[in-house]
Length: 171
Image 1: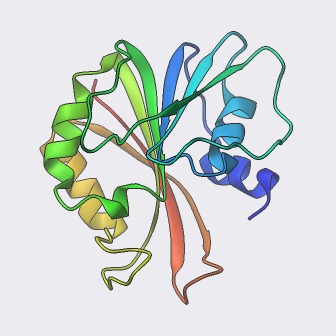
Image 2 (image 1 turned 60 degrees about the horizontal axis):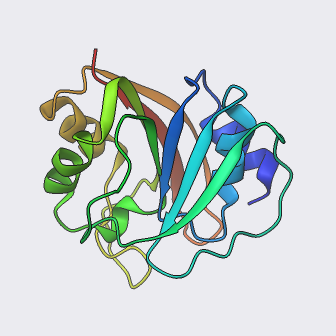
C-alpha cells in the first residue's frame, strides 16, 4: 500500500495532541496519521522490535517519537493521549477486551481510536487472532465506545478479502 492510499483509508478529522501508533512497523500508517493530524501533534511510533521508520513525507510540524515497547505486555509510558492508532496490530492480540481496557486508561477524555484490520475470521501465521468489522464494532460498544464510525475499506493485497478502517470514541 502506498502512503496516499493509507491516508485515504483513515481520513477523518482528528484532534491535535499526543497520539500512539501501536505496532507501527515501518511507519506507513504513522506517516499517514501525521499527514492528517493538526500542526503541533506528537505521534509515539511504538513497536516491540527496534523501531526503524521508513522515510516518508510528513508535515514538518508533526513530531514522531520512536518507542520500542511491547504494548500488550508493558504499560505505555504516556498518558493523556488524544488517540491511538492500531493498523494491522490488533489481530496479534488474543484478549482484545483486556487490551482495550488497559489502553483506555492512557486516553484523555474524548480521545479517539483508529483501527485498520482484515475483515476475516480465518486465522493464519500473519493474522493469528483476526477480528471482523462487525465483531470489533460490537466489542467497542460493549467497552463503552458509543461512537463507532466506519471510515472505509479496500482490497487486501495479501488476502482475498478486504481491509477496513474505523474510529471509536467515548462520548
